[in-house]
Length: 298
Image 1 (tube, rainbow, N blue to C red):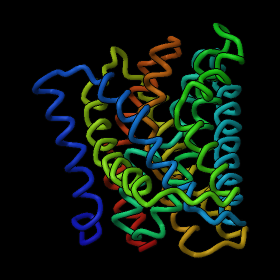
Image 2 (cartoon, rainbow, N blue to C red):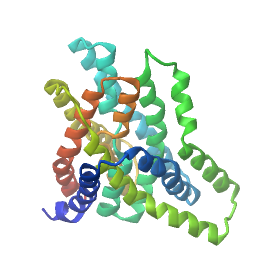
Image 3 (cartoon, rainbow, N blue to C red):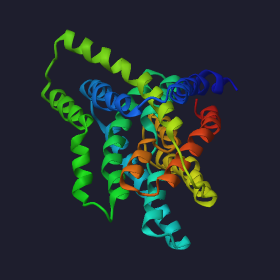
């Protein structure tokens, strides 16, 4: 109960504020989401990459991102073959299971549970996951209707990508920015996290579905909240890494479905009802599953 009260409840309360605000005022979430994605998150990512001393830990973060992605895609494809899903159903399930909410949800959980050093790992993970999701998420949402180059274009349309490139360039060249510039970056980055959390609550309030496919939603929930953190735990057990990084990877892998996948599914008409259902169910159940997981990790 202590973990729930100290870590999970404060974060869920911020989501609830966004949820209640949206149900009450019925605002247009797109402008708020755009400001978050196009302005504040790039500053947060720039802050992390500019000050990062890259080594084996970053390589582990990148590798685990791809291991989780391909492991879950493989499981979903096997399920698709066994259950004789069509391509649309398979794509919808991949969107619902392969991408975690490491930004709006994962980073604040890590910060509250493990502190500032762990938060740095979480930001790096979120940045890599954003690129992976924009590439593979758009591909699976759009395959059959759009070309793969659209997915690549989506990655380079996101300012986060350029924030990473600029930060890495300055970092590797050893360029020291003026203290006032650093202060401005820190000021803007500080806004990103609470705004991301409010936006998630607003996005959840807008989730609608006409059909609730119990079997698929249950399977997607198990894959997302049980299987993915188990895969991350195996990576941590088999791969020598700092204990703190291992905890961060397991926690982030246990996050619910990324709300962004619902937007992909809606835009490309890739089973949005299914993706929305899994997103909502995993987000609600994660309040319990994360509380239990944190008891063992913190």
